[in-house]
Amino acid sequence: MSYPVTYHCPHCEAIVELEREGYLADKSVTPYPLVGWEYADADGDIEAADGVRFVCGDDGTLRDDDATGCGEPFYLSYVRYEDGEEVTPRAESEYVRIGR
Image (cartoon, rainbow, N blue to C red; front, side, top):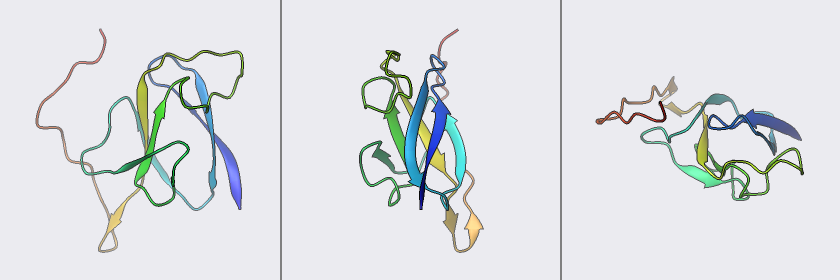
């Protein structure tokens, strides 16, 4: 059974909505992808991926039809398991400062 789930864009706080299965566990919503995670587009096979790549306002997921969104990508990452253990994301090899 699928449910509507909402997320805030980390760039502009617009709300997006995604219809998805209840068994998927969220890990994080970030303005950058996690290293090692594979992402599906919001209109793709979101259950076969490690998360979802949104493009705020450009992918048809905005909850409010009157909102415009900022056009920036952001990422929903699911909890991942390998050999029965939860995978902890690796730190980026380079640090990037986003905004001020």
